[in-house]
Image (cartoon, rainbow, N blue to C red; front, side, top):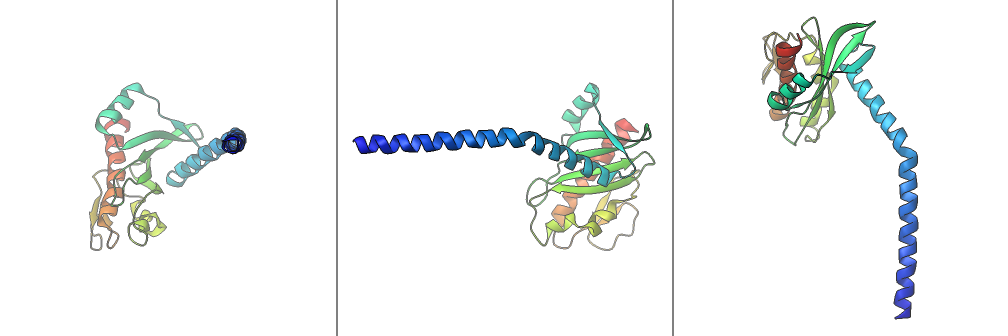
Amino acid sequence: MREIIKLAGILFAITAIAGVLLGLTNMATADKIEQQLIQENINARKAVLPQATEFKKVEDEELDSIVQKDFQMIEEIYEGINEGELIGYTFKTTPSGYGGQIVVNVGISLDGTVSGINIVSHTETPGLGAKATEESYQDQYKEKSIDSPLEVVKSTPSGENEIQAIAGATVTSNGVTDGVNIAIDLFNQYLK
């Protein structure tokens, strides 16, 4: 019985020390991790609206309630600013793909075109849906007019608003395009 109590005490002491060390490590690295996440988000916004030199979160209660009601796929909206002038917006959208949620950053310039897209995260099938992260796929969206919704086609695109689907990953292609279209729709209705 004494032996069991002794072993339990030793195990408790080791666990307590490990817990304290883990907590201290978390406290020491939390600020660095947060700063790294902030910088990654800034870089993701710059990737889709490269002309912007700074970004300011859109904080408008009326727009927030509209987004929560009608544009639930949109997580955040930022103004892109260059030399004090508004040049466009970035949107973080969360459409559904084949493997689950896809996080897509979308940039829209005030000239009425998509300035770029970037897949931030996904759980799509490697070799198929994961091809949505490739630059060659994402470049299809650049300079597309926002006058009408974009459409996914399985053949070579013939219309200005068409995006060629990834072979074998039409659901992923539709998901990414849904994320872009919801940003276009919000921009056209409320930010133009």
